[in-house]
Image 1 (tube, rainbow, N blue to C red):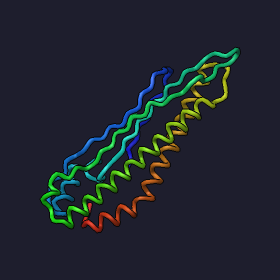
Image 2: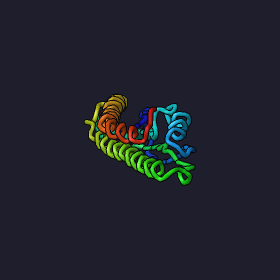
Image 3: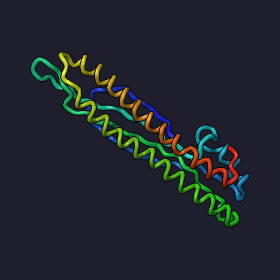
Image 4: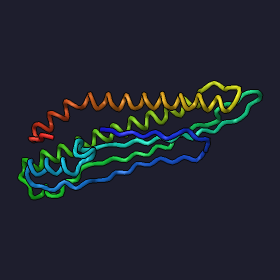
Length: 183
């Protein structure tokens, strides 16, 4: 599951990207206890097991070039926050429960990594798309076009994230049903 944030376009040149992973504790030794704890402690008020939040901040440098203004460089600050479960009592659970939730954990980590990869891909696409904007008579006009281009390309990013979640929904549902998860 992914969550997104968009930040306004600004005319700066510094960039930074960061990936932060946080864990929420999931105690319990039975499927029922673990399910209750995910519902109580999990991201999105327990409606998700893991999430990836994406924040993209465009940094665009414009330059006057004769009678026009062009984008000299465009960089995206990409900040990603991945939230994952950390099973705290699985060592005390029976072997079936332990192996099932370890497999679920690996799948959730893989799933969230795919969201990270999608965001990184779109970071590059957006940077290239902004630099490719045709020079305009004024920098104000150019920045207006850049804002619109960024919004449209960020929406394409969001659509790919949603499409990935839809494609994965049945696989995750099967795995959760096999664990007795009812959330």
